[in-house]
Image (tube, rainbow, N blue to C red; front, side):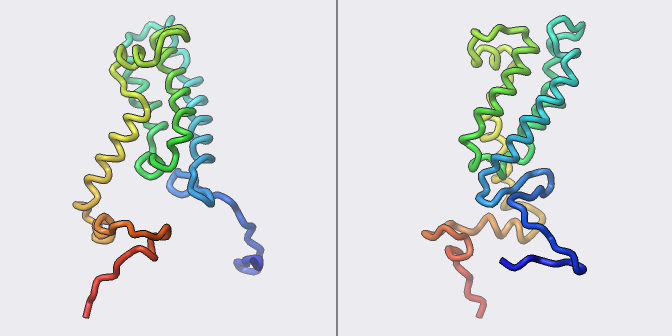
Length: 172
């Protein structure tokens, strides 16, 4: 490909781009995006460590609220978009969520994750992603933006590319 120019200056090619906080790569695997989420989560968890640690004076209820308000949204931001494509990488995010939940409960590593989630009444990450994605896609047909509402009516065809599989309605 020839180099692109804008106002006489070369624009370098990039393999990924960040749009509305979601990092898109060439093949839409979202691997870079999930790696960034994991790093941001660990930084935020380290900043909140003194509040969530077992020696903190906060109650378990307040620690749970801090997790639900400040940490979980970081893990689930944009999940209706990357949720299906990132199933392979979702386990890495579940691991960092488990770190935070174990810190809140002061649970040792040998206690199974399902008991930790049950004690805190927090669903596992894959269930939360599925829940958010289904509620998002249920609301798409009734969206106020006509273009978005019409996108919900497109049925996938036999081709891999969406433009090749769309049926164009007869206008005339």
